[in-house]
Length: 267
Image 1 (cartoon, helix red, strand yellow):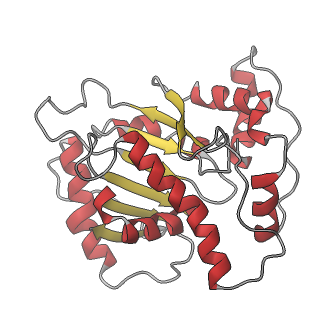
Image 2 (image 1 turned 90 degrees about the vertical axis):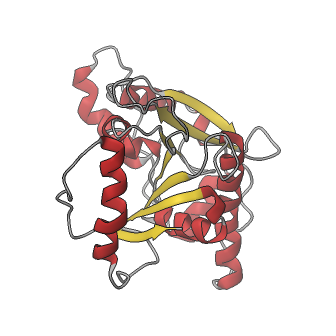
């Protein structure tokens, strides 16, 4: 599923004697442009390996809550799917049936990672009263492997970067449509959380599609080397109160690490 998932399965093997032993580790990472091209286009589909699905099952068994796993159709072919793990809020944490419904929290991993990266976060975040969805980007993890629009020899430049971004962002747009996420859609706007390269893509998506995003949270985002002015004030003024309301906290602040979180704010 992803590198961290393989490591976790190795470490947790002793917890489940019935789990099949993991296959050998994936090969070492290639340079970004080459590895993206190869990993997204090489047949047969890497996501079809039974050992990868066994790794996913082993990790999700550690979540501590029921996980709904599905392949969300995001394009015209069977290869255009995004693997998604969803945990609903516990009954004791769920908001009463009064509208509007709680916004879904969508977690997007970074480069060389997958939805399993968040397996320890799914249950705690769902206790805030939010449905939590962790998704593998198209072409990664257990998502489908449609043809990638670029070759490893593509020249560097804005056109190449934009073409690569569009591969992922167009799929995310279709994901929101399929999941009913967005303004005037059944699930409403989402809280979008991206880590590393997922943060870079999430930020672009929020700028392009603000009608889908209620709140944007970036964790160590790629492509954003400097913290925006006043980000800490905004964090405590907007993000912290939002999660306080969902969790029913009455305190004014929570201890938050100073590094690794960049606030964009409400859109």
